[in-house]
Length: 611
Picture (cartoon, rainbow, N blue to C red):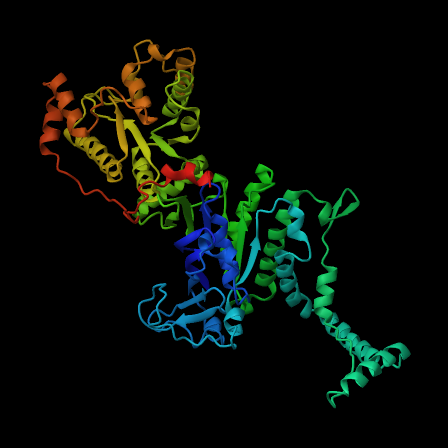
């Protein structure tokens, strides 16, 4: 089964939060925005703790209970037959909806929802599923996924200590492997024989001590006492014997002597090895096993860039295994991969009340048509740096590398001139969208993440085509349509759109030499120029894109541009006819966000970092 929805209320820095989860879910956002709290909540949800101390309550207010709700889907037949689940599933949806409510000073109340609306509410209606297992619902806890929580510790050695949750989990995994080894049965029987001999001893000192205890007990009870040694050979064997020895050029060293990156990679490598062990030896039994949630903070910590990429691939491969689900927090764009199914990205920030607010969209690439999904996925593969846009305060979207060079270089000049702050410059990501069709997809994505942006593209309303032939009415209508669609998407959340008069090169002076490489030609042109030497229209577009308010706003709406072109060239009959016969198209806006006090996530990022 998979954890598909999680709701957290009044836990640490989270007042109320609901997130949808998939095979792998990456949570991003600035520091101190409660990303790690989500992982801690999942860990707490499946723990045996009956009560929480006041430090776990939102703003230390113990009047409101801490509560966790979860919806599990993809439940196998074997899981549905478990005692902690079979009498507790939601009758209408076939899902497993559970909650844990921690009222201060009172034992936790766990229950499941069997009927009614499958929402995560705090009422009583429908919450009558029998979890079983006594007051602490041990059957529920046994059915809840094992949570392997790997925090972003300052000392990576903490992750490989025998007392850590990680090694305890690995011990659990290895118990199963060891129990299937025939030699273990022989060792177990010999251990039991040794235990019998020890417990039937005639040691004078122990007998004396036992008689003294017995004589005192006889004053209040007739019961007898007998001290016995109770071996747990498997637990003792595992806890004392899992050591990873690394061999470098014939020199053996312990895991504790390895670098932090190696230690961290070792934890996930063990899980990957266990995955392959299962697929080879126990494939038929996997569905009946308790699933594992790998909750990992900042997997990029301590890792060399190459190893970080390998680590990322390992996590994503692990998440595709039915036994595993991965939930990670990250500050690295390299750990985001939305190019395949069953991935989700969640972006945290704080709203006006300083409460955590998520923006997320799932891996169906935001409900877009298949063709546009494929276009976006291809862009992610060929230009992985586009993931940086999810971490940006604001974004500038352009069509190609030439514009990226121009906007970045002129941006630096604006900083040097004191017209733009260095902070705003560095927190603005200029994205090469590889053309307007892909740009259309990215605008939908950014709208749903609430990331403010400026889109800049070629207008492409020209009399002549590349072959110097006159452009047809139908071609001009297509250009008008894509201009309009991009404009509508930008308007949807109050973002800006500017266009090059015809193309980027058309904005440049006659002295501009294109060269064989457009981007290099742009660099050569801008590197020796001062701001007052740049083409005014282009400079104003770049200023406005970085958020600098112009004295005279530019007219860049498509209907305004058409009128300007026709006023300049009244004999342009093809554009006249195209404009007259053009009809407003349907714009496929994938609106999955919820309007709130936080219209744009990035607006409050600075506030997150100050808390």
